[in-house]
Length: 171
Picture 1 (cartoon, helix red, strand yellow):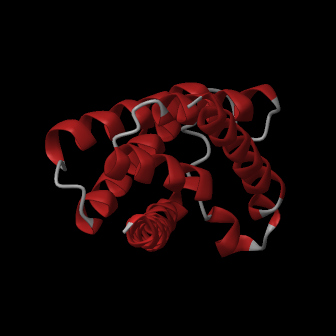
Picture 2 (spheres, rainbow, N blue to C red):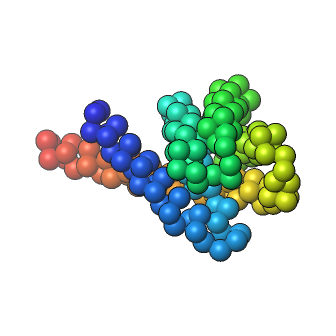
């Protein structure tokens, strides 16, 4: 159990590094891909991993500490996103389907953009691309959702085959 938590923390740190060092440095439309946020939203919505809300808040804190965001208050914006994501996953979109994940991603990212626009009203030209940011989070969440279903299916099939071979070996 502790090994799984350590591996999860290490993979989140690697994903954070990949998001901030590689994806954010791509050319214009591709730099808006929110892979870290998509993984957190899918984990909260599909898997019920409520502790991923703290990963979103930590991502905002990381952006604030290293001045990688669009300005100050990224921690507050990502905290708002985490709260809306957890609330919508528990109360509104509870069926854990692809549409629930996409709706939760759209609603939580819209909340993030709303809080950022309140904190930074002078950056209005930056928020003209907010539709593109919401669209990228929804599409990235859908891709992450499908990948997790595929991987969990492979893992489940492997475990099923191992149990079957162990059962046959005992006979």
